[in-house]
Image 1 (tube, helix red, strand yellow):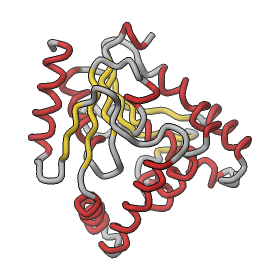
Image 2: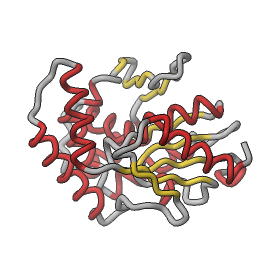
Image 3: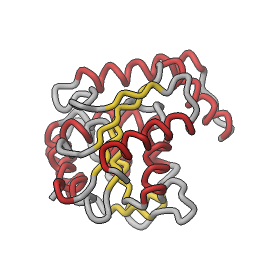
Amino acid sequence: MTDKVPIITVDGPSGSGKGTISQLLASDLGFHYLDSGALYRLLALAAQRHQVSLDNVEALAVLAAHMDITFEMNPDGGPPTVILESEDVSSLIRSEDVGKNASIVAVIPEVRQALLRRQQVFAREPGLVADGRDMGTVVFADAEVKIYLTASAEERAKRRHKQLIDKEESDSLAALIDMVKQRDERDQNRSVSPLRPAEGAILLDSTKLSVAEVFTAARQEIRNKLNI
């Protein structure tokens, strides 16, 4: 299926800007958009609500396979609305606690297998932009265009710190830097689908680049590979 539909993967660590760039690319190309990280965040939130322990692998896998989730695209080109069991949880799944638990469940092989097929069905005409950590290495390994977007841990923590301040929430920058580094350590060293650039991926470091500059570089790569 995946070799019949144009697929662009954008992988990278949390805070690198891959969500923003992926949404811009999907909007520009008129493609579908998959935020794979949201699936793990949704699972973490669903586990909390259904009182499923994060060390209960069997129950987590069942929950992952049967979650009632929907992504409603924003006609203005912004982030999609994420629906869990008929409730808009777009903001809830972006909390630090949910993010931390999502990183924990993401290392469980049974959970990743349960969510694999669900992610792959997003690949449909006219094309897909898939944002995540193993889109180009595992889920869509045959994708025509693979991008790996990163930034320094300090810069990613600063971006998150600004988001929290804008939402009138607080957390120290030092604590956020430490949290980012710990999450990177877990993601890069997990036994299943570790975070790494896919073979043939274009590497973009957004630490000192604007959103427009990252978008331009990514869009040029797509133009070179897909001629669109």
